[in-house]
Each structure stands twice: as structure tokens, then as C-alpha cells.
Length: 222
Image 1: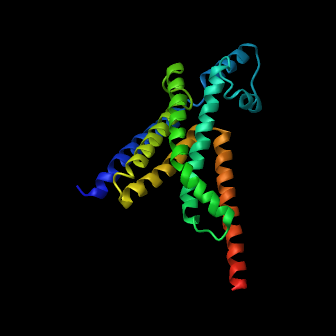
Image 2: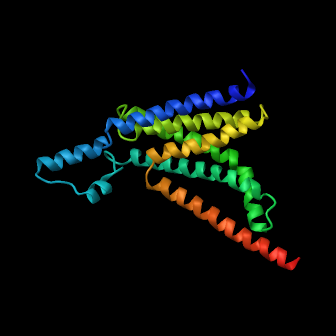
Image 3: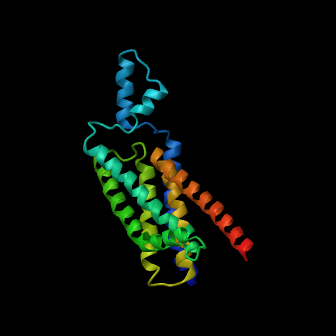
């Protein structure tokens, strides 16, 4: 077995497992959280029917708030740190940008990339363990959360071995797994994830525009 196959094989297995979990959740049709299902049943007993707006407002409120709301926010914070780590893939090519601000920000991301990634993993574990303990297996979002967690754990593993096994395939897998993690999060996370994706796209577009303008100005001066 070649080194390339050995490098890719664990990631392929994890992605296939995660994909199977996401497909299962999508096809089983259990898409309503238990707490929201209970509210719908109570409303039906009283002769009421919740509107989509009402259900959207209740989504994620949970039972009793408190710790559950905090753990939910921890999940959002983990997405934020994961987003910051993901930015490095774009900004690592801007270490020699003609714009001082972009160059400084790229160097900053280089310094915090590993910290942000490991912080995202730790917070994800806290978030995941809580909901695995408090909710039944198969509840809404839980399976997709497991899939995203498996991918993130594998992503972190490859990030750890990059320094020990310095070959292009390890880095390629690390990069590809980051995109796989985003896909899994699209199934699992809510509006905060969408906001992070929107902010990322916006930053990258602005970066391209600003750098193109700067390059044109440099050519004109030359």
C-alpha cells in the first residue's frame, strides 16, 4: 500500500461513515426536536396549530433553558473558532500581500490557526457530550452533530500529524476534511453557521477586490 493511500484511507472511511449518518438522518424523516414536538402536541390538544413563524421562534429554546442554552452557545463559539481556523487556507497565500494590513492579518492567522482549531475541537466535545447525555440517540440534529464531530476530530488528527509526517498528502487531506466539516455543519448548525459562511465569503470577496486595486496601483506607479 502506497504512502498516499495510507494517508487518505482513514479520512475516506470517516467521510463515508459521516455521509451514511447524514443520509440516514435525512431519510428517516425525524426532523422535529423533541421539545418542539411536545409544544406542538400541547397546542394541538388545545385546538391550536403553530404557525411556521411560531415554530421557528421556539426552535432551540429547549426545555428549561439554563445550561442547555449555554451549551448551545458553546457550539456556536466552536463554529466561530473553526471558521477562524478555516480562514488560514485562504490567507496563507497572502503572507506577502502588497497591503500591510492583509499581510499582518495573514501572519496573525498563522499564529492562531492551531489554537483556534484545537479550541473548536474542545468546545465541540463539550457541546456534543452534553447533548449525547441529555437527548435520545436520533433526536433532531444529534446524528448530524455526530457526523460533524467525527469529521472535526479527524481533521484535528491530521492537523496534529502534519508536523510529524511532512508530505503533501497529509496537508491535502487536512484541507479537504475542513470542507467536509463545513458540509456536515450545513446539515447540523443553524443561523449562526450561515452567518459565519456569509462573513467568510464577504471577507474573501473584499480581499480579492482590494488586492486587485492595489496591484493595479503598483503597476501604474511602475
